[in-house]
Image 1 (cartoon, rainbow, N blue to C red):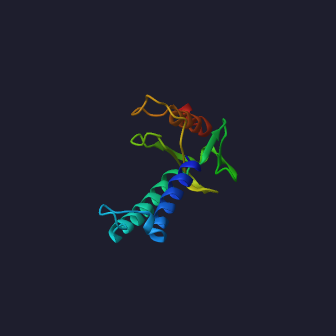
Image 2 (image 1 turned 30 degrees about the vertical axis):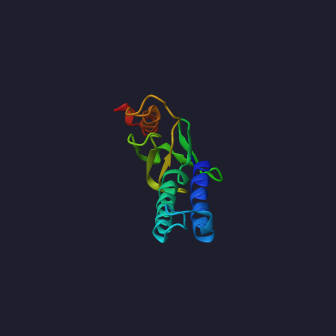
Image 3 (image 1 turned 90 degrees about the vertical axis):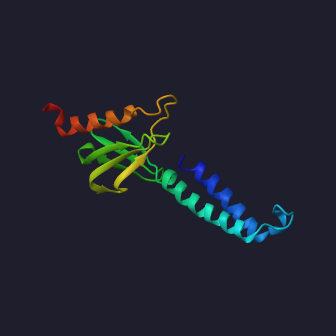
Length: 149
């Protein structure tokens, strides 16, 4: 999700867009002639919007591991350790099939005030909460002593 989809989608649309402008004779419109200028600009717009959406949805994803005391968060080049006590909230987006999980922090980390990761896919659990969300919440409560109340 973080590497392959952005490279394929952004690269493919960028190459198509460039070819529409640099090699218009390779493309034909409905009348058999070169594509209309409006189509070219529509493809530019779609490429820009798609790039922003793909970047937001995929490139910002992190890898997250956890033990009883900390989260280990990586962008695949750098890994940081964040104490569970720094976790303010854990949320997920059930509307998106990949259920992206967002971890919000009390204080900024090396990756900012929140990180987003995609938990392992569950094929037939579309609307239910992903179990990893509750696992992180329970670990945070244990680490901060909130489970003893």
